Length: 167
Image 1 (tube, helix red, strand yellow):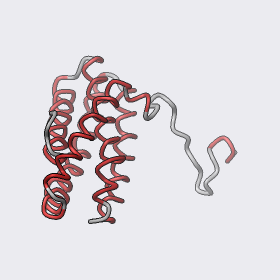
Image 2: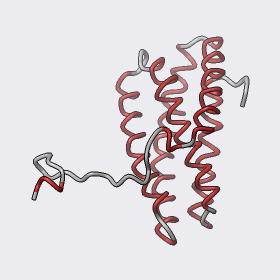
Image 3: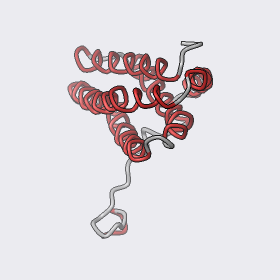
């Protein structure tokens, strides 16, 4: 992955993640495989959110805002997948895969061509180097450094109060 421009790096990570989720859906995944995929998926989202998207936001603000929202939903689904077992694990892997495929399709068909057109190749190369290094660091730290998948989500009532306070 070293020496790849930002777009090629992201595309390679997209393929790897969707393949891992396909395997988890089709035949299940060993806990270690699932953890590795989760670490890499979270690291991927981190480098997009902290390095790639801030640069691209100047070109397409609304699409970047949508991408952040899609990442939030992906984190939610990833946490559910990591807590699942049996058939639930396979189903949740499929749901996360389908969610990510939609997100990836928008990035690769709409965002990346515009980025390639509007950002110089040398800058994309430099972004790729920076993103690769940050990705490796984030993977080494693990997904827990960036979000807590085992922490239960707090439900809110229609008035915005948490469930505990709504009673």
